[in-house]
Length: 167
Image 1: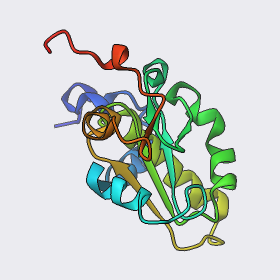
Image 2: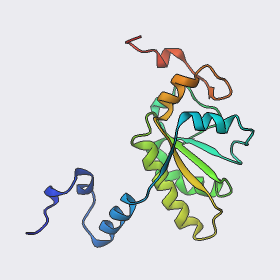
Image 3: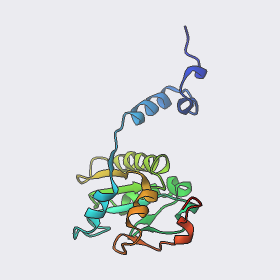
């Protein structure tokens, strides 16, 4: 029985079925990313380590960036990420820990982390330092719930943006 694109998972159906695309799809799917929870990030930020030297937080939220952000985070909107990833790799090649997130860290954050990691491997081609790329579990939404009142961790927080209709 021949394989039909209709029997494949929906995410796989979006790729063209040239042999090199199948290989990329499968190899990307096997790349494991580590998650960091909000408490770990808060502890890191308060540990005395220097942002943009020892670690960097990359926020890939788009219009939902309004209303607050993790202090010192760099905002590279997901809609522009592919156009800017090479520059990000060059700018961060000496930073040992890169932390990605979006609002919930379910789609945009993990996707950007994977693209960054693959691009870094290709661009630096073996001339890389020992580094780690991680994803903030539950994204900014949950981080701000717990740390919105801590100016060492959150900046530009706006209660009107985050006010819930159910509060």
